Image (cartoon, rainbow, N blue to C red):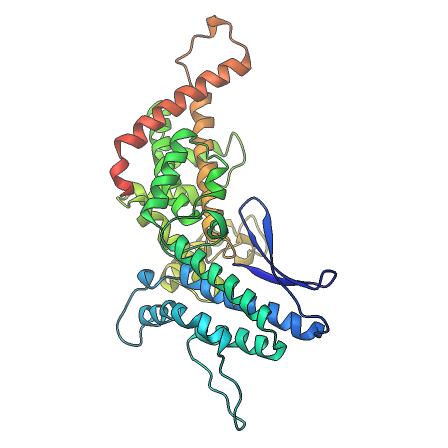
Length: 375
């Protein structure tokens, strides 16, 4: 989302957003001379809230809701998205108090726009209102652009957000980047929606684990765990994804429920109580087995989590873990490699390059052979 702030030194309203590689900022408007700091900051706060509310329509699209029946979550989300059409009007013609009453919309996007409009009304500056309206229009256009899978320019801020759905176009673009570099290039974090990138990374992790499994004779689902013995790796989530895919899930089916559940945890919900109860039962059984070695066993000591992902940034967290999993596959593959003859007297660096090139070639072949899973 875009964050708005007041530059008191220049008496200007500015807007900034993340690009995945640092923040960028633009001037929105010069503030009228003589306005109070409180009123200026109130405008910046209202604009930030409007941006956050509008971007939620991107991260929580109606298409990802379980139901679209009347009064359902899907219908509510669609109403929020439809309210984009009334945002600019609300900036210039907001609901104002009258006779001790004021109309307030139950649609959050619409009400957030009216709050900005009321902040502008207090400032009573036509040029400021015009400039703010132009900037909000650009923000809405960026969201619409991101929804279409184009994360260039202002829409690039979407690379830091977690979405409940993923654009097939973005998934394909992420897969192309991983084809160029299966370890994951920087562009994966600065040009691609992280949920889409995670779906593509799951596909390439499965390919890497399959190649490494064929080379080492280990089960695909044990590859990353075994690699953790070579180098410390976040193996829990990559292993879970590999297990889901081994059971027949597509990359999207393996990834998106994890992300959606983490988003629900971030909002204070417990997404799957039955699964949580099963994990608690399993943890209690584990504690019973360890009770002889631990005087006061406790569930707290196990660090049991509701979600394996960071709820504050689940898609990015998952993407990072999956890429670490691919590296783990390479570690095992490289350790087990016997194809190259040591008699060639290669130095360590050249030896490493050749093993990496061989690994990449096999992984690309495996990923390409099963590309239909990404569709």
